[in-house]
Length: 299
Image 1 (tube, one colour):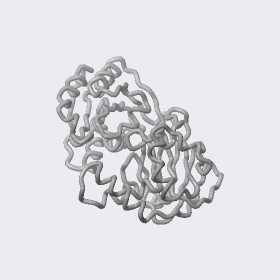
Image 2: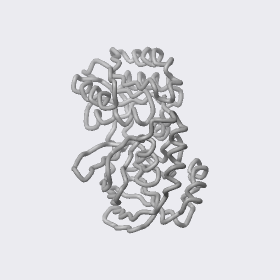
Image 3: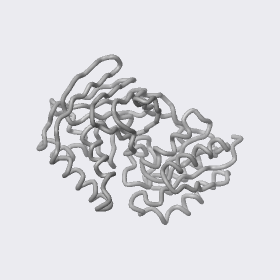
Image 4: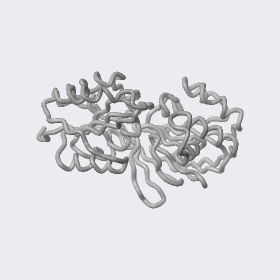
């Protein structure tokens, strides 16, 4: 490879900071690939994404995301369609993409695997999902797009200043459950049209989101397809009982829940802000396409 450095995007607050002390060891392990290691400087999510794009434009051999799915989401925007490889060091609360593509759970082992892949010039191709909103703005995501109750919870939590950490999401769930109502959706899957009234709609490139909630348990990020889940009206009691079943994916046996596979998906609904990899996309409608082998993963 002619590129001469490894760009590292690290989120110090990922995983509530529990891996912060590991960063020097991660950087040292990456350095064994034989390339200089450059830690990117960014004060916000937007700056982080821009820094990754600049690194790729400057000829980075690889962009490595140290954090959870949100950090991965920001970094991967820069590597799609580029020569730079992509590495993930799982250090977040939710590491759903890393788990789905076989990245070692231990951050230091993941960094060592990235360095070895660079030395041996090998990689693995995985699919990504490409979104396009009503304004034509395009984004990529690696794990799951939420367009139902889960998206409403994310939007609510992001508007709250306290409490901090997971308690904020727990409170957001309670507040959204209190005002739960089914909504009218139109879901297009490879030309088929599904009209429904319900609370759950999601599109997955990988099986899980939220740190192991297997919303589409059979999704495969290397099959060239997206898994789409939607449900007719479940109601407050069923939604409350859903989370334990999401851990092992048994919710899909509920006759009110439908799971389909498609290459192209369009979701239409009013009053919903879509979230992908836990990051805010914008209001529905949104179109989602599976792009096979879009990312060159180093592991």
